[in-house]
Image (cartoon, rainbow, N blue to C red; front, top):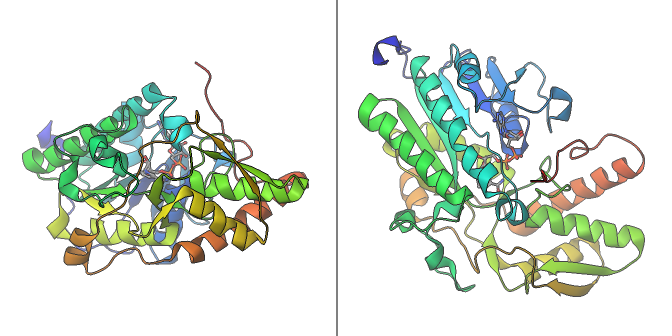
Length: 356
Ligand code: NAD
């Protein structure tokens, strides 16, 4: 198996080196394709299993392929000639999705397993894997007044059932491809990413988008009420998409971080109830609140400890939540208006929950 590998000679990225991004029809993968394209990279291959017309973003000049990368042969096609591979494909969503569809989440292990091998065989120099804060030990997240999670808190392992365990096992795969085979792998544990061009409806959306949509709907209908999942006391941090793409680039090009999981998240903690207040202020409306205590709400509290990223990269995500939420709210309001007017909107064709 190892003899097949042809390692590309140059350690530096050239503008015409082939960059492969999976999950590029989705939120973060699509933003990453745009990020590299904006920086002058001329050969980007974007891959997603969704039909092309369902992609959240199509970046001009980027090769876009509809391939299911849980299939080994498709991974070989996707990785052919790749110098860098960014694996952002996963069957995922907000708490409503990952608490309900654990099997779907676990199956994403096939994606990373085949993508790693195909990237290795193709001689890729660098491989990025998008892990998640859900890989952290849930026992440490029972109090809304959390202490922020640092990288070593993933072990002893007690990850989020389904989704979190898949991430943890896939991280380990990445680490062993470096330890046993010398492929440079990079692993970021994202803490809730939000922003324009993300899922905002259909069942997979996360709290910032869901709350923005509910506020838009309330304003539109004149029924000034909102239902919040849980009691609103649960806390989270949220990272704006532009910080996420920049962080992925910095992490993947830092050799001190080879095979080393690192937090990529904001450390600005907020309770969900306060996030609702923030969106109300942005929207200029005040809503009557109802609490759905039976709805999925995830761990009580979670924040990102950014000591390691600051020490190694001298950087951390810095877009304030208010600034990012303002842009996100404006975008969702426009999406809502477009859909209402019969125009195409980003989440229009997204498959929501798959009935089992
Ligand atoms: P997303 O759902 O918008 O995008 C994921 C994309 O992967 C989708 O377009 C989907 O069609 C595609 N995909 C799923 N299975 C596939 C397959 N077998 N073959 C090809 N494509 C496939 O999600 P996102 O928010 O952009 O997340 C990207 C990555 O970041 C995922 O690995 C996710 O687990 C991770 N992550 C995201 C967040 C977040 O807050 N968004 C937080 C932690 C980790």
